Amino acid sequence: MTLDIRKTALSALGAGLLGLLTTGPSLAIETPPTLNDGVLTVGMEIAYPPFESYDGDDVVGFDPEVSEALAERLGLEVDYFDTRFPNLILGLNSGRFDTIISGMYILPDRTKQADAIPYAQTGAAIMVTAASDVRPAEPEDLCGLTVGLQQGTSWVAKLNALSTDYCGANGEEPIDIREFPTTSETSQALLSGNIQAHMEILSAAHSIVDKARGRIEITSDHAIYPETLGIYVKKDNDALHDALEAAVEAFKQTDEYRELLERYNLEAA
Image 1 (tube, rainbow, N blue to C red):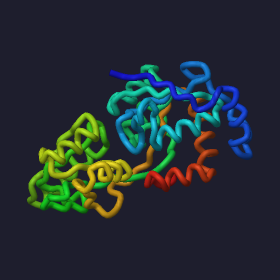
Image 2 (image 1 turned 30 degrees about the vertical axis):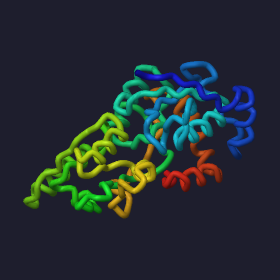
Image 3 (image 1 turned 45 degrees about the horizontal axis):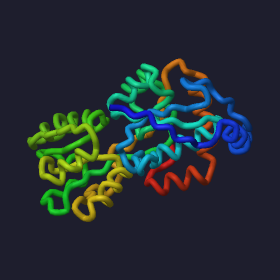
Image 4 (image 1 turned 60 degrees about the vertical axis):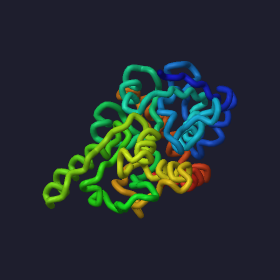
């Protein structure tokens, strides 16, 4: 079931005026046409802290803060359309929302389906339970282990390739890869002993560890498989793409952007 949640960043008039003041030397970024007049409808999976999650009726996290900052510069309000991660590009291309801002990597198979604008960089982390007798620090240490990932993430293909090209080639047991609908279900599988390791985006992994209160630990000491996060727009929607791209570039010049990256353990794109 999907939810269509309205979160107003500013009134359209107020946002438009403020956008003129905050976009820097280029002054105004022309308000682009959207599916609903005056509204930027953003597709995301609102079950993925710290990128996006619910706090009561409010949508909070890195991506909502980015969405509001960009909408402000475009003179728009913000709607959040909640849907499962694997369905985001399908929903974008079927006209359910204007853009995807949901911690989604820029990958060739995705950019064949939609256009992407870089907005941050991150990588993955490996987690195990605190009581585990395995301490994988690198992907190669996952040979012979049961590893959980959220369905639709890019690491599924990477670990399948690693299992064949590295584990098998070196006489080690393959990686037993298990996919789960959400990251919270993956971490529950880890705590219940159904998987031995959980791979997740670094900032999300820190959030999982904090909530687990000592029951889960990160065993990798650096970002694994670093990638760039992208804001996705339907192909041929040049007006929205160009306006969002200009808004992103203006936002990147601000202290607000740099402080957001630091707070959420991300790097600039």
